[in-house]
Image 1 (cartoon, helix red, strand yellow):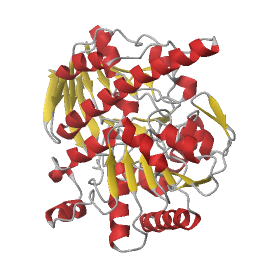
Image 2: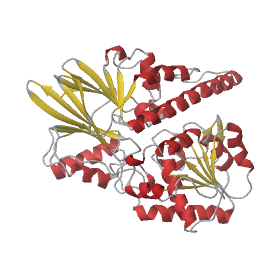
Image 3: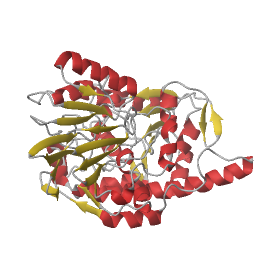
Image 4: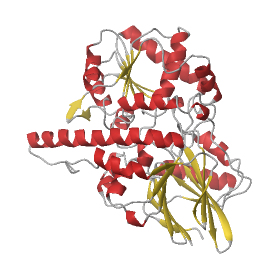
Length: 467
């Protein structure tokens, strides 16, 4: 018997996790953190399946909404093997240690604030997990390269394929045998865009019995790649003219590196002035160093830049910020600057202080270059909400708010359909996940009507028998 249970990213974007049970073998595809405010309470709930009964965890990539609950399920009893690609195995500790430190810092700040205000918040004033919890989880991680066939049991074989989303990201192919028949099950993970400057294009497939497809941008299309540089140029030159700062909430993995890649090209071509560019994210700095270890995983254009001595992550004006004191010193810099800081959805990290310093300044611009999940501070700002709450205080939004969707590491509506077009015949079922409900419904309706495929829109904790 082959069964799947949807433990996250079902009817919403974050918290990605699927539980597969195949003839007594239990394994997870991802174990992600919930980042939308409406679903954050799930992070604190006991894991919805006994962790000690899970044999493997297959990780598509190191983004928090796919990996961020790993230390917690290890703390709750998981002792299986965690399999992922070599780049992911190196990025994962950076992400989890950074998150644990933020969890510890935020818990302490929250406790002090609540004591001062004489109240209790909706979540415990303790970290979800600690640095020690991360240290206990990491020995379970094993790296598996793309295209290697791994036997999880006599009935289950898995293969990691390039997803083109971030460095080391994967589509996971599961070959599950039941009653003498082999079923090919494809988990897209997060699909990337084609023709991006750093990572390779997503792999495609000609057949599958079941497909689990992300749908984050299933109802919209990104800016054309050529427009990305033009839009970035406009925003940099505008703040230079007005004397403000360009503040960019930045995901530490891929988005920070792609921004540096574009800024490097624009500065060398003299399309933008040589402003101070701060990458204020120790995690992004560490991840940037990882790219140099895995040149063979990069797109041809990026490999050529490295081989010719033009490091896209090193250009005039770039300052890599590590310490907290260095971060706070940015606000004292005279004139305009470009500030990239995490987190990408403004849910924590150093971006919050930069928002406090700039969100009330009409001469500054807050530029969003990645998906903002519903309920996050980033989504509130992008949707035009004012005032917004930061560090327990309300701030009027007077800064200019801009968005460039072409930077997204996710495939858009057109590219999702393009990826599906390589399948020569319909699967037995297509499951749409990792998207907001109305987005999933829009894409599901379109696929049913235009392709005639059977499409499911699973709910949280729904369990489905495939065979």
